[in-house]
Length: 262
Image (cartoon, rainbow, N blue to C red):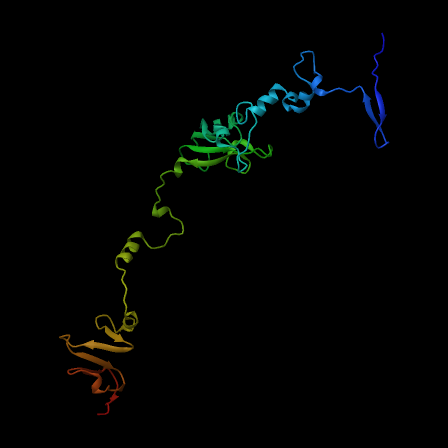
């Protein structure tokens, strides 16, 4: 069989350091890629569509569509329309916590599921609960038959007991020691005295049945008809008459006192 040979004529280039092909030369627009004579070499080089497969062309032209590539939005996030609804909604229900663990392989990571009777969960007294399948970063430490623990594959998101919660006073921790009735009574009796400093000077002394009102340390009493003021003194000096009103009495409880100067 004869050997095919290509004949090329070269000449020294203008710099004198190499060679340029002098022959043969042609134009890319005059050379076809194959016998179909539909695509020239020039078209093949310029048109990038000629360099990709049909599947690649579908991916490029089907942006954000079926079998197309995904384009992020202006914030760099996946467009909402392109998020799988199964990852955002509750699409699977299990009757019990045990069934949840047994069916773990049917749930995608991050998916929410509902357990209609989650009472086997130590944090659920009764009713339903919603769980999220955790990211399995360490298979040895995540057990999908358990819920809520450090090694559990399920994280509780909500439960029926947290809906329409009624808080009872008896169940509040660190609450005041006073009863509800005492607190309500105190609120009912609340008032403000502008002259509190004066009122605070009133005190009481004496024995039961013989109490004596004191003001600023001095004992006070009244006559039987509640019209005459009586100043009770135990010792000292009788107050000046100018400090008393007509009809007032000075009562010496014990000892003696010196009369006031006239």
